Length: 237
Image 1 (spheres, rainbow, N blue to C red):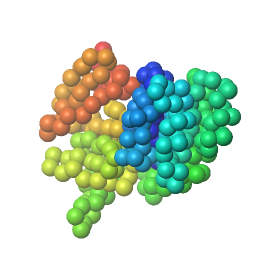
Image 2 (image 1 turned 90 degrees about the horizontal axis):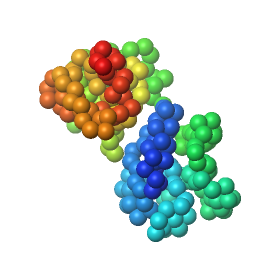
Image 3 (image 1 turned 30 degrees about the vertical axis):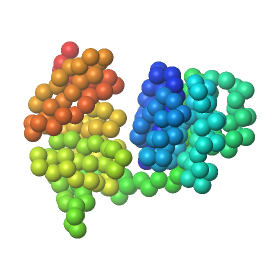
């Protein structure tokens, strides 16, 4: 899966783009930020495959930020702008592509298709048929095989995809998408899956967010996007 960083000083534009990228099921947004200075730090720390970069930002513009990056290690750059006149400038500055605000789904799909060809991210899902009986995980000089029934939650972070049981937090080469499709785990957040039978409590928070407490006391976030689906699943109003 393509890893991405979204840099945009407009909160709603940033959140909308993150949701659109998630809907493609081809891109994992590993972080976001609202200015170029923070963007530079996160690019160096996270090393995403691609950055979706707003051009007009206070203090340092997106184009100015690119000049501060090492050309040899710079990720793919997709400019996101509300101004048509910046389109040609984006290509002059060696951007991979550009998107005009408001971002259209069909236009974004073309960009993702091009990114997939360039990044050549391996897809493990064809290696797995039907439902998974066991989840292969890496351990110290060993391979752990965990039953999906044991797993309370799975999540992704900068170091990979992790599955969590009562006693084990292990890393797997499978993606969250594969785990979602091939196990009973369901999506509750862009970066988290939860086993429905592991849910002990759903705590409703402000701003339409929630937090799950599992049978063994793990805390799992629920985003606004998935809270309604979770409520509907359990017949909650």
